[in-house]
Length: 334
Image 1 (cartoon, rainbow, N blue to C red):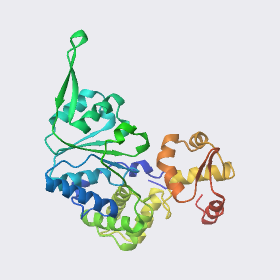
Image 2: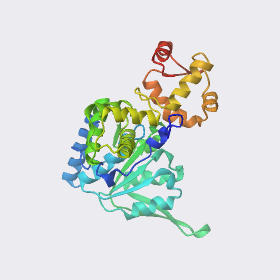
Image 3: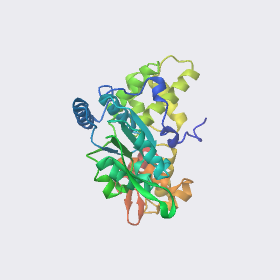
Image 4: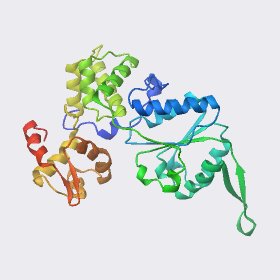
């Protein structure tokens, strides 16, 4: 790999086999970050377990990679419930959902990831199931078809989504607990990296962990996958631990600078700054120039650039704020 061909940011966001390496938190105590949210969920889960009742239906939303699925697993362990996992796009027919719902036992958890992508016909089946613990199924065809109201066991639905605004109002209103996950601080990510390094059996120095944390875009999933890539490089270099020098070298190979900007981040900024004098310029134009899908730019890359104050969305298009233009040039980020 060379610096002209850096690893894609998307490859650092794909789910990894944390369970296999023992990096996956098993309890609320092991889950680091999201302190206020974690405490609320712990109280709710322990109270439901003490009453031997299903936890209220719970919606967790926020950017990808922040730990929504992990929290669902921890809730299931805390309440002593079995959990069935599925994804919204895979529920193509109402029968798929009905089969899952009728197989649940009392207080079991059904976890639906990307719940906003569930077909509307399937979503409508959930309304009655969530509120009254019953589902309507149609038996027969044509003139002889009849609807049967089938009772199901009381259960908990945990929905996870990166786009809560795309949930319909009727579905959203049926969740008793609605919580948002925020991006992590560098100190929180540093702690997560240090713990993950121990589980992966490769020591990492505090300054190296902090450098990785500052490049992880506030996202534990990216941080852990970056750590694995640095571990690969350490293994290749026959190093028994990860230090600052190795981490700096690894980030260069990955095409990530010390501010956390990857190659495509810099390409986006360079397009706006150099070709369009800071903007504004349309998203589709940027996508065509940098060779990336516009939806990917909007959902994966832009949020980080906006949080860092390097990009603005305006009615006329994207632009670099005037205050950031000189700093970009001075820091030679482009």
